Amino acid sequence: MKQAILFAMIAALFTAAAGADQNPTVTGPESTSEKRFVATVQHDLATRFATAGQAERAGYVRYTNVDESGAISYANCQWTSADLQHPSQLWYDRNRKLLGADYSIEVTHSASRPSRWGVNPGRWAELDGHEHWVTKNPSTGALSYEHYVHDEQFAAAGGDPNHPAARTLVAMHKVDKAADVVHLFHFPELWDLTVWVKPNPNGAFADINPTVPH
Image 1: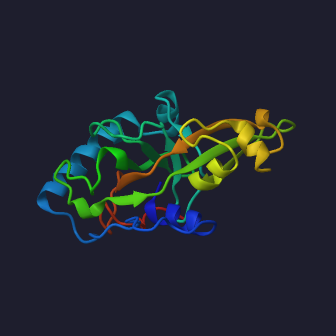
Image 2: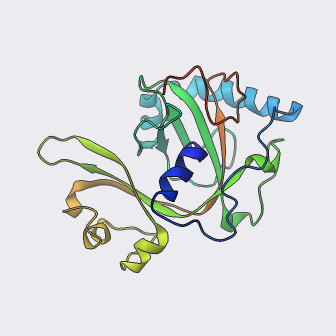
């Protein structure tokens, strides 16, 4: 998910954890090595995940509405990206065409900003742990997205953030019935790197792409 949008979502409900690096420190033009990284990612992902259908067949699940950058996020719940071919998230436009990707590394695997693939470590941002879920209306079959709660609140209600169960959401009065929850997953504390696959005149690491309606 685009970092600035996720920060806004969480800030609306929660106070950020002390010491979390919730914004990248480097936002300028790409270096030569970063341009190589972007070119590799753009070529590969645009070939394998051009549409949301391809992402879904590979195990990615939609969990957001359209955000302020025009993106809809899909996650595969594999939070440590071992290589460039396996981003933890992909984002698509309203027409289900690929826009970009997130690469992530759990904070438990790297205490400091990662140094990988020739990308300046300052491009990575630290995100706090939380749970996301998707519900389905039993009467209409309509799916509802953009549901989330912070790890601390989930744990205070008796849930295990690392192994979330829908019954905890019922206890928290977030849903009426556990059966209404069709997807529930833990988004752990991690380092996150976002990159546009769709060419962006503002740069591949920018928050907004002016060529994307939003």
